[in-house]
Each structure stands twice: as structure tokens, then as C-alpha cells.
Length: 32
Image 1 (cartoon, rainbow, N blue to C red):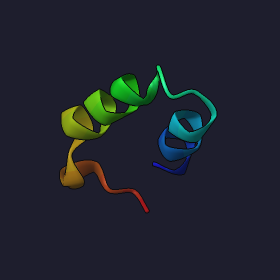
Image 2: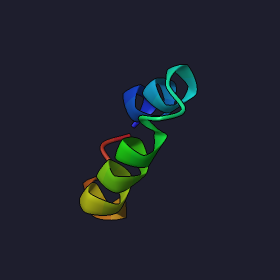
Image 3: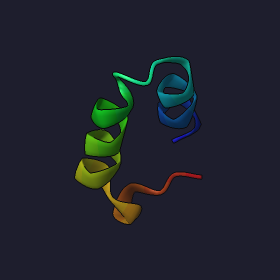
Image 4: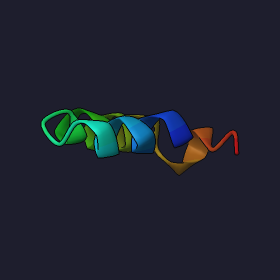
């Protein structure tokens, strides 16, 4: 999850992708 957030910060355009990933994985796959 940290990688996703970090990627979003580095690339605003990819932020949508990060959000999509978070929604796809969901809190169920919260590996920490």
C-alpha cells in the first residue's frame, strides 16, 4: 500500500491508477 501511495505522490496522473488499485484490492488485502 505504501508503494501505491508513494507512486501517487510522484505522479499525479497515475493517482487515478493508485486509487483504482486500492479499490480493487480493498481493505481485505491489507497486508500492512
